[in-house]
Image (cartoon, rainbow, N blue to C red; front, top):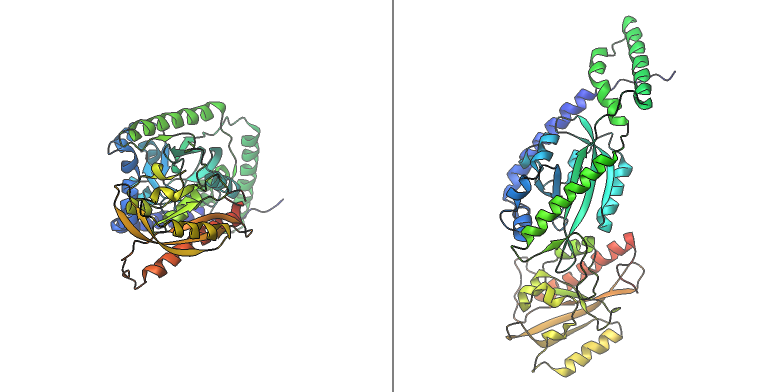
Length: 417
């Protein structure tokens, strides 16, 4: 017989509880950070100020996360989830969902969830999570993306969690568990009589937790149906309240003018670049814009849906130099970078001199995936870090190239080549 080593798992639970409390305190102290503002606005900017109250009326256990914020944090936790997990809302918001995992959480299941997030698809899987006090519990984890109707981007992920109760004790697994437990107790009693200090009573309090954590549970059809129904109710509420802001969401990706949106992994990386730039796809007819930064929209006055799927020529006007346009076209055909000074026009008709740098962006295999165009209004000054406008511009180009190459090296080219 194989001897079993008794682990003082209560010590782990105590340490875990102290660690959770300390982390929550640190999170609360950091609530004045810029990320806190993003977390607070993640729902209200998309669905209106009433969305949290509406979601709190739903009886389901669920979380909402925002992949566009660094760390992919939780931006909403339902009352049902908080009651099930034992956490307070301030201990959850702003943190990643990995805080609910523990030593017996199946790593393969976690990787499957991460893969679904990266591929922006729905996944439903049995998962062992941990409550705030450290006790394990099995759930049916149902994750799905929520897309923006205007640009097809993933704006949120919703994670519905349905508890999976322990099945009938007459099952084969339960019987085997009872035999193992009885054998372990007999050995421990024998060792105790021999004077061995194995803390039997401590084991008696924790062995059910350990064995329950190790025994996989499968969700029933009823639990799967319950998760899917809850997911539909949540999506219905999100869709309804998104109409108040005009930033409508949907459960399936919407294609804008036939242009497939970039993956959320890439758009998240690009969103961290605080410069005015666009990405265009040379493999599509008329080389349309497939990504536009917030700074570009602010500079030109256009909204994102007015930009995506269109060629950059809408920035040109009656006094735009045709020779400069020909120069740009020739450099693109030669797959070379170029910098030009060109007169462009905003949506309101006002003009500005655009110090424009265009560069090809290659994927991990060395093929051109995009062209990036970084705009800089003439007259821009040094930033607070002492970088010149030209250096900031080149830095943006470099950041875009790193984002595209790092993504394509993991999941293959983002675009056909």
